[in-house]
Image 1 (cartoon, rainbow, N blue to C red):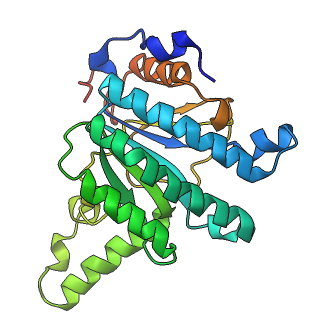
Image 2 (image 1 turned 180 degrees about the vertical axis):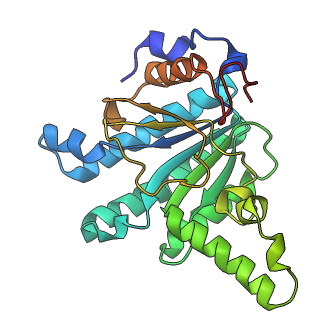
Length: 255
């Protein structure tokens, strides 16, 4: 559990240098549980508690957007009981946290494919998006049944249909056109400025590959169930200490 200091402190860096959109790969739930002799589902349950705290802290700090990788399109390969537990946790989180999102002015979005998700999960996703549609604070995006390669393929397929229908000139297809067809564009969030990965893994795991082209990376050895507000603050301070050049030279304006 976080200490009182974790909950009440803030990053030491200038707010103006913080990222506006933070994306997170929440890794380490299974290892956390196994190290304690618990089933993997116990790690996922503890991970949900951390999601609650980090979302609340992100809203308190005034971040613009937070995107969490909760279930990849490849995760269907996991044991059926673990997948079922994850789907149940997702439904419970959305149902229980909707009043908090409304109170804290958080707008919820889903990114990923609907196909394959249980109807009860889709119902909670749809209701949470509907209920928070007028919120103007933190945009919380949940990447569920998400895979970046699939997302890019879906975007390309949509553009191809427009060309086939004669409504688009193929010469007009550029980065902006493709980017506007991505799931995150539909959620109206800018590309992430910072990608945080927990549990020390040094890979992107098919997550927001297009969108994080110029994102700064922050990898921590901390397992997601042990991730605290102070760990979030460290990631923000790490980001603020860097100079983003976007292919330019030191001293280029930071956006």
